[in-house]
Length: 255
Image 1 (spheres, rainbow, N blue to C red):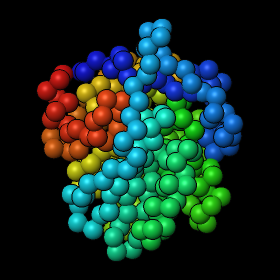
Image 2 (tube, helix red, strand yellow):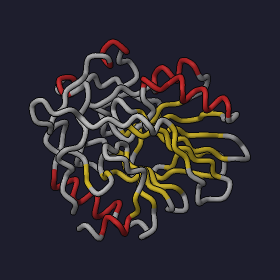
Image 3 (cartoon, helix red, strand yellow):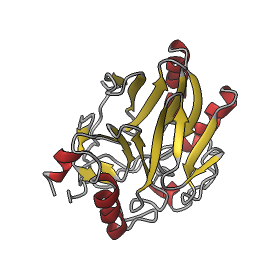
Image 4 (cartoon, rainbow, N blue to C red):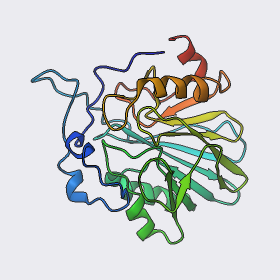
C-alpha cells in the first residue's frame, strides 16, 4: 500500500493534546484550539505548507438529487463535506471544524438546508470539531461518531449502520488503524467514500500515536476501501499538497 506521506502537514495544534485528549468531543473549548501548533515531520526551521486558496470547493454530485459541497479549513488542512437531498433539503455534514463554524452555518442557511446529522470520521487530534457548538445553534441536530472512538455523541455508529437524509444515505464501514474509532462513510450508490484519516490521497493516516496500528490500517484499507468500485471517488479528511480527491483504482496503482 502507499507509504505514509512524510512531509505532510503538521498534526497541528494538538500533539500535546493527543495524549490527554478529552473523550467528550462536544465539550472542548475554543481556547484550546488556539494553542495546538506542533509540526511533526518538518526539519528545524522549515515552514509547514500553507494553502489559503481552497476555502470552498464544490463539484456536481454523481447521484441524481444529491447536493454536494467540499469545504476546506486552511489552518488544519481539513476537509469538511456537506451532502443534502435536493428535494427534502435534509442534510449531513462530515468532519466540521470549530474555526469554520460560521462559514458552514452560513452556507447551510443560504442553501435552505435542514441539517440532520453532524458526523465525525474519528476523534481528531489535529483540530477541534464544531459539532457541539453546532448543536447549540441548530435545533434538532444530532451528532454521530464511532462507538469505538471513546467520544460522546447522540448516535454511536457501528459497521453497516446507515445515516439517512432524504432519499439518500451514507453507510458506515469501520476502518480502524489510525485510531480505533475510524470510520469510512460510503454513499448509497458507492460513487463516493469519505475515508477520514484512514486513507488520504496517495497515502494513509499516521499509526505512531493515538491508538495507531499499521496492521489494522492495512486490513481496513484493503478490505473496506479498496473493495469499493474502481471509480469510487475517495474524499479524505485532510490534504496538504493541493489534492481534492482521487479514486479507488488510482490508489490500487500505487500498491
